[in-house]
Image (cartoon, rainbow, N blue to C red):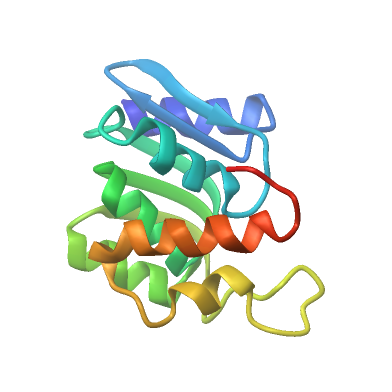
Length: 144
């Protein structure tokens, strides 16, 4: 099963994201935060439809990208309640190890900046979210 392959590969290779389809790993990444799924959306949109993905942490921003990427199944270690709603409304099966109310920033002092960007958006706003994520990272000199 593809979700099992994605989860096992994520764990064995210490990845942050892994996508499998038809018994093969078709995408993987080691970067942290929103970057891996945002890069998939920007560069590989349409290639992952029907895949199964394992992602270490899924907040609302990541959920919006996963919906737009067309995966059918997800597993995550940490899932926010807002992300769960986005995925459920899109009909994507998502299992998780831990459910949290919100995703916090890396210092735990505020809401994650990506979650702030995604807060007013719905699943059909992935292009707008990508533009905002790109602008956020461009200020830090990071290319998506």
